[in-house]
Length: 224
Length: 334
Image (cartoon, each protein chain N blue to C red):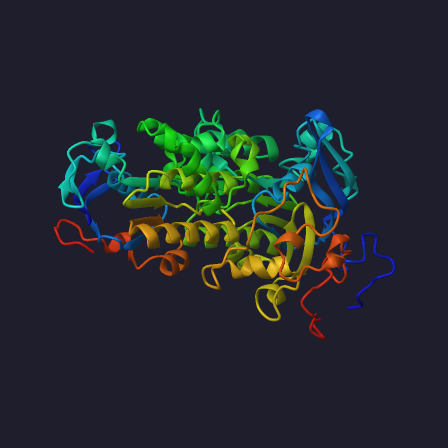
């Protein structure tokens, strides 16, 4: 279970963008979180992915309370998450070839020797050719780069996936291909998913359940 | 309407409407020269015409050449690009015009650009109000005393909230930044609006409002070329749809027939619609080809279930469809 309780978070303590919001995703479940631009849904997703420390509230991952965010989070909690962001260009180091980009989480966790096999396997899953793996981000399209970013999110075999507008920049075919790759991974690994977006047609088709930002429980401990 | 008009100046594939077009693109090709003598065929033989009051949606997967086509029309291609063909805006050939002409008379005045990534398009160190006032001052005859009001009216036209006018671009959400950029594009009242992915990153309500606004500007007699991968947005406002694949326009069709019955006729266009979550939600197998390494024949053949030996030759467009095995055209589609 991924449990977020009474989360208040933002970038200015006097004006938090998320106030006392709770959200629960059951183990192996997929939840689509819908909301308009600027409502705070991405901030909540970042809190869930341990990328943004909330001002208050608690996050419990598979029964273990979170005590630190970002580099303060213990590695086993940090690596339980794979995150895919909306804009692949902002999420990719322009100096890295796609193969290195995908392998970076393995390198960062001291598992460099697994990189070659893992990258080759994932490239097939997300539909990247060997030739594309040798290119740098400026030499590929947004869709191709997002495929690499998804592979990077999967390389540590996370128990949780957070997809924040993963397909908002992409055409219909690439969107369908990436969602299919996520679902294939979830089917075999049992990973849970929090997908954030504003496309209700997409999230309703993709996720077990969808919840609108305005319907999230406020100031209570109950989940969705 | 007769299928072939003998006096039509553009290729007979794309029938010209009776009024003279705002924009008439004829066999536009763009090649990028790369190191080692390599060539990237970003756009090949694109032809279409756009009448006043008409909205043409140019759709296709990312990397298919849509944005390069837009850049070519605005003269914003990098130096290693070579263009051939013609793109007539009134009597001005955009491909032959010099930078001075484009900068002083075309951009903003005769073509309004709604850009692809507003955060990169807006000046980061100035407020939205300051950028709007500058644009109003440069493009219209509004006296200094009226600038503030005119800028606020321009913001209002794009549904940009007046409360956010004094913010800098980094303080805006993606949606608001897009509306700021749209507001800037509308200031000059250009006869041609060129919207390059105007709805990327916007939520559905905002997509609808943004494209409805663009449609309203078409309804007042402007031509609108909307480049998009958002098929729902295209369906909402387009009169006609042009589908681009690997740098070529493979199908041009009336939007209602394309999105409704009988549907697209090119296999690629059919597959693209089938990838939508409200339809089959199945991706097209494989990936688009590299524009630097295109096959001699149909570029979609390697991903196409209908491909045959004939597809090794390039299909010529017939009735707006460039395919050897198109879906049967229904009789009396006109």
